[in-house]
Image 1 (cartoon, rainbow, N blue to C red):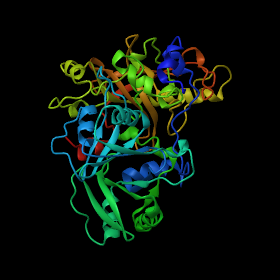
Image 2 (cartoon, rainbow, N blue to C red; image 1 turned 30 degrees about the vertical axis):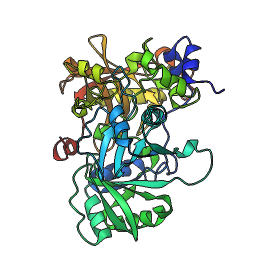
Image 3 (cartoon, rainbow, N blue to C red; image 1 turned 120 degrees about the horizontal axis):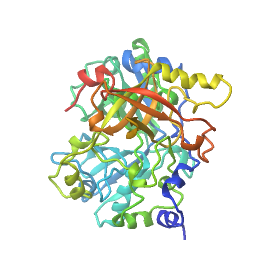
Image 4 (cartoon, rainbow, N blue to C red; image 1 turned 45 degrees about the vertical axis):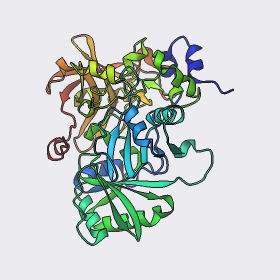
Length: 457
């Protein structure tokens, strides 16, 4: 019999140490080149011209259908599903029974009783668990991300994102007319290269655009049509290096640790999860260290999802979230690191003696789930969860969750960079010395355009 996650956790003395020493490095983005031109110009394209992201390979894709599908989604989701239906999409971030986020996905309403969910594995594992054990009248299909596929067969669908100020002119050129006026997170269908393409009105990097998807066998002609139409509008393809940094400007925290490791009500789920799955190898990294794994969990308010929480239906974690909603203590911010401190960290690589943790460009993340301590007045006031460089802003930025009393824009805090004791057993981390870097609390999203011109309430 295959060992379960629950059995694995029972055999370890410290869940935190197990995950901090897990050998898996940062998330990878297979199927695309690291750079198609260079990551600096690719970053600037999403603000100045247009960028094409290829999301066809690195996410799990789950098809869910049946009379009980919407009931299942409402059961696991804190969002309201009032009026949700065909040609709509929703950001879904299911929580544990204690109200902590397990992960997030995008939910697409494709047809009556037919849905598509796309994202990282943790949230989809949770949904699949309830589809199998919850008594809902549903069926599902699982399309694993490319790296973990057991065979070399092609995926069920392709997925592109077209983002930037020239996204709409490119679509207009392809269609030969102005695209329909589609509301944010609503969908329509385009005819591209003779194929029906589902189009979600999106804005991942703070610029208008579309997420486009369809059957895998139609991928190449659709891609060719997009690239041809985009040539005169400065369209660039995003390589994996640029892709992993785009969230710094838009403000989405992409990798919350799934809140599944504790809680009596979650035991059945841990017994269902395998000991060699995502949750068992989800590496933690960074300077924030606590003996309690629950200190690494996030609430919807921590991640900026509090405004989506609706108590108009019964769902897992409802009572806990209702209690939290009275006065959430933390909030999400951007931290803009002091240039001179960043340069000091980089400069340590050129000096003899102890060096700081290497700071990769454009994404400086070195674990699946980065947690660096944010300090003020000699105490920890929050955690940084994603860090990297923005060529558009000419700054090293981090996305952080911090105590509200320190969240006022302009407040100076300190980021502690590097791992305690000079590193863990992770082979992706060299021996180093921790360094402090000053940072200014800033709005999220950081981009002026994303924050002001493309705000969605």
